[in-house]
Length: 318
Image (cartoon, rainbow, N blue to C red):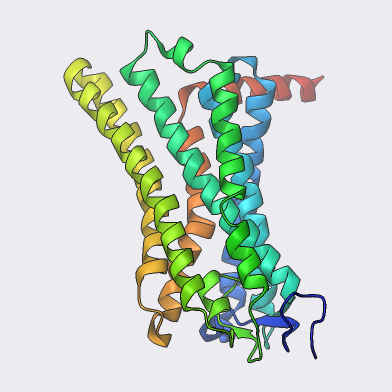
């Protein structure tokens, strides 16, 4: 059936997401695990957002960054996980319309780009706080904070439109089975019967540019932080600061490492399940780690949570 609404006529009007076919006989185990991870992550991030909004002591640039990261992670997971959960329960895969597939791919790519930028500005905020404490208030004022957050969101969502429009005009003649749990770029483009060499090269160059530069800037920020920690802080404070920096670097490395493996390893069929496994890391594990590492280990956030819990208990006892 032809889809006459698109600029380039195609025979395929929907795709079937096959997900983890190898797990189908044991689908309830992965289903429960993913569902619990999703609920835990969403609940944790909502708690952080509410805490940042309610507690005036957390109305600072750094906590604004963390609140935006929490909001993004909720949306990030909600774009992918519901379909993934349905796929675990569907023997023949999960159907998604052509337009729905393109929308999911665009939202996912934009959210990943925004996450990269937010992790970068969060690292920059930590750099200013530790390396320039006397000038921090002047350098990271409300206006700069709003500009950094706005640029992260705008930059993330203006990153993909050209590639998405290009994909939208590709011809898909069949088959329509995507062996993934969401509409990712390579599994989708491989199904096209158009010449995809140019779009694949363009997407690769765009992704490398948009990922490598923020990653290097993030590493540079933490390198300066570690240098200041080594030179100026006492051994007790140094251990605590190193612990915090190490935790942040673990999250950043996990996120970037999974992205790199997915988009660098060969696209042969033998690598399909490997790609899907590492896709789970940046779509499930990283959003779970972000509130645990960046926020729940933050002293100010913990103090605010304890204050909220105390007030809530006092209110319930009335």
